[in-house]
Length: 96
Picture 1 (cartoon, rainbow, N blue to C red):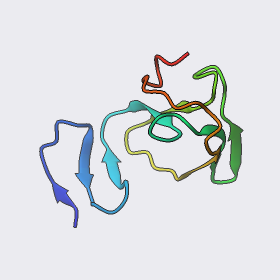
Picture 2: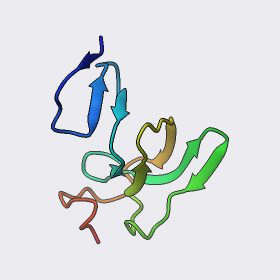
Picture 3: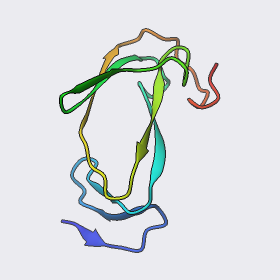
């Protein structure tokens, strides 16, 4: 059940079912393949559009960034090759 709360995060509500948030501030987030970046992200499907994951964010394509606008909503289908990268404890934005 969704409840209104005073969150320190840019979310107005959280339903508790999956990742159902209402974004009230625009944000850029980083999505990573696996807890340690061990999966190579190949492509992302949004609706009828397919995009290859660019290698400029991380050379091993273990992560990519997404810009979330206020009030946005979309379902991303991320295709990946499992265990293609060496696991790393480094954050995605500092990984070489």
